[in-house]
Length: 263
Length: 263
Image (cartoon, rainbow over all chains, first blue to last red; front, side):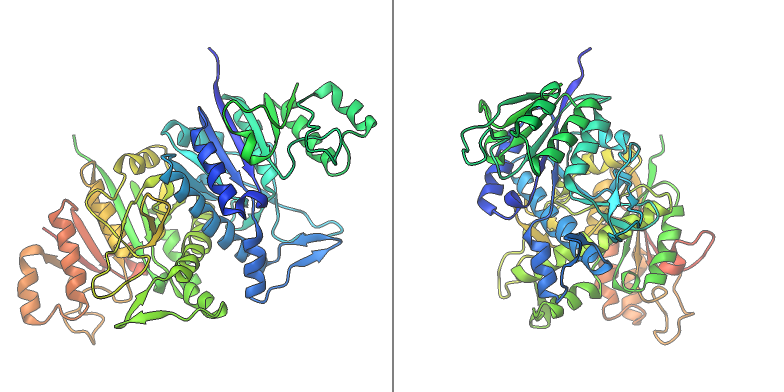
């Protein structure tokens, strides 16, 4: 018997912070057929709130540190304000969304990042056993559409800030035993570009075997390398395809856009 | 066939704001047998955050108004910070809690309070059809323990601030078709007191028929009258018993405490 399809879509600040873009994205997302899950990152709100409350972002070696004050703020902004507004908007579009942090239903259990040279604070890393497949499956089976924010927990009362890309990928991998999973990463660019200056030079498809060659050719460079590396890792672990591109095009029916990564 | 039992417990600021009290309460709650639901109110955090952000509480005729800024704050504080921390604490006690606003799974759909003499702002009132019994039942059936904050939605993208006592009562009434429901209101006092000055004068049981008489005798007076009135309304609508008393005693096994209201 063929497995059911499950689409996991990840959006970040560039959609969250633009209310019009968010509206149209959620319109497209609500029309998406089959089982689906949304994962959303943060956005400017947390930073703005921090500033209003007089809490300066803490950086070490250019990386953001989640101290206890920052954790409180991201919990309020991500799990509260953003998550509940996204859910309320999806509900208005007849999509039976349910907002979740990783603590809810113990859906995502993380481990606080060990301190080596840098103490990242309350940041959670995921492992192969982080995702509660049965519970997420249970929610999907009663017709709900999980909407995850980037907050997880350690199972011992501690909430943790966790990268939304990583959450989306971990969910897609874990659910691929039961579903044919597709992972969709929405970001600023139209996809992987042959020419960074030319938005119309999107590489429409990359097979796993081509990745090394494209790196050598310099088509894939900079921040795109870890992104694609992680995407191919997900594919290697059972995800059937990963799409990378812009929110406003990627989900629209009949559109051919973005870059498709496959085995 | 006898119906399964379902206990709906409501806690307010006096538990939420006291981390030790909250810890012991959640310990007791996690041990409670049978299906259960927790409903929590606000607490000082929202007011403190408002002050930090320079937003003064708006009052009209001594009643708090939920303007758009206040709504943002309570959404962050109630649905984010408080709700997720309560869930993470319950998870650590092996209670598979799932935090919800009324928008999540469309579990509680409210109507924005119509403006008569006072505009309460973004406050939601509940009706007989507000509670999504099937969805809540679905969550209970997969072993989850819903934890509701006092935020609902109107189904048309708008989140709304809603009284937590009202939410607890509406859930208990709606679920009583499928379950034998008990409603537990935790508050500052040990229960209904014969003598307000004497904490040991708790009236252990009040039957619906005795309510009028106790009002005449002055045993029930002041703010207790609407509280008991609403409790008996819930009983009239199918809830089998309502308990009123202190969080630290009411749920502890083998304790005889608080006031029990029955038909």
